[in-house]
Image (tube, rainbow, N blue to C red; front, side, top):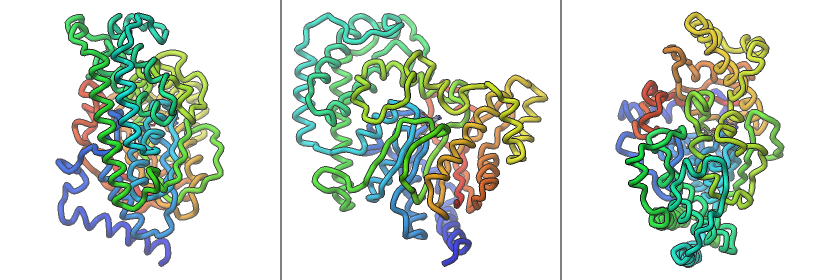
Length: 441
Ligand SMILES: C[S@@+](CC[C@H](N)C(=O)[O-])C[C@H]1O[C@@H](n2cnc3c(N)ncnc32)[C@H](O)[C@@H]1O
């Protein structure tokens, strides 16, 4: 089959779902974050079932898919779905918390041993009577009450005493969710924002929360193992997939000789500071994790302050936005038209947009270099608003990809499930739809 016919077959296959049910891709009531997808609550996660079905549609038309790429891997939704299908994987993210989640997802899945070790770690944390605080960072007394610091320190020491790194990683991930629950920052926003005195007084016990989260994570890992086993992609408690996870800036220089056959990814909607602050969301949890246990942590300076990850993410720097615009504007008419509209309302606001698109374009360039010829790409995109003007990220992305020789295959639109974002995130309030852009290299 030639490439155009294959594109048409893929388009028909995807359209067939929506012919039966117009709202098919909204996945309303059909999506649950089960097994490995329940290990971490991360902002703006993709719908696993949807990405899984899109991967299946591509696999049905392209028999040569072996390795999947996600250059903005986040909590690893694409990774989990790739592993369920026995596919190899390359994932990249700037955020160390995302890397930890992906390392846990990729296994090994020694479930019986994990349960034994979890009992020991919980026992040690409960018996620890030391009042010594195990970690130190600016603002610790603002973000944690003294009694919470004491409990988190007991858990920290118990985890450090566990000899196996694979088990420590599961424990660190469970501790990271615990920290989000017991810190003095509000859970209704991803930005660090102090709770009321009243709410702080209601902070639950860190050890009790940790126990709950750890037990839930063990259940999720047991369920993941059962699925991999059922799908015959498990070999002695390890998935057959070769998984490579890199802590890197997708827009920067990345060394890898791996070639991928399919890209499935969702980049941020815009710069982190004004859209979703993944970095601030992760900052306090990362303060309570021994980062030397994260295998692939290579980016320096990420935890220098609470906004460091966000300012090192796509669009984090406004510097040189004029020059950047000159370099990129010929390649996207939609970008130019959007910049003109925003400029007429608030010229200052175009700098962040230009810097974000410029960085995104560099990330596209890198991603294409990891893909083999004719590989399909499934990009999940949200069109945010700046100065109340919609930024058509889907059209901009299509034009940038076409300017690099890629072919448009299809675009789907779907409603965004309401629970995907913290309810006080302003971006969530203005974005109700997202697009799935399917392109071919
Ligand atoms: C929409 S989220 C991805 C969520 C993921 N699909 C999931 O289901 O969990 C976007 C991700 O891009 C990452 N990111 C932002 N800028 C980046 C950069 N320059 N390089 C690599 N990752 C970056 C963020 O840390 C975040 O994890």
